[in-house]
Image (tube, rainbow, N blue to C red; front, side, top):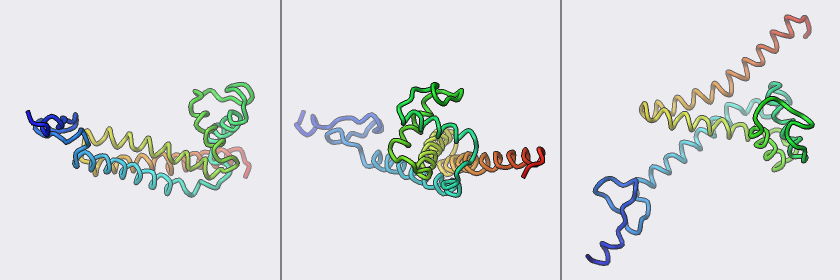
Length: 171
């Protein structure tokens, strides 16, 4: 066996006959990972664009406000469920506490953090969908998820709040 043959290592992602020198990622693997990063960045851009109209509003709905307030309490050093509480698991509150601690008093940054979470969820939709359909349809499914999570749900909450105010006779 030659020295060159001994330095060749089979990569787990390589096809049955392909090997790579020194265990580095083959060009096709590098392209695949770059494509995945580009997909995620495009989903993040779409999430930020669709959610941009709500970045600077004080209140979108009570649920998001509760997450932000409880995250603020955690960032101030209070334990979960002591000063401010909601009946949800604490990990979401911890994420908002991290955002508040990172950039205090910036509602736009907190809303961008929400866009990151929507983009991560959309990427998971993309990864699941790509096993069932072509990549462009999987990307469409992820984009539709972003639209549903950003525009439709926010508008539904606003519509319900307006209907409730109308039904109660207040403006």
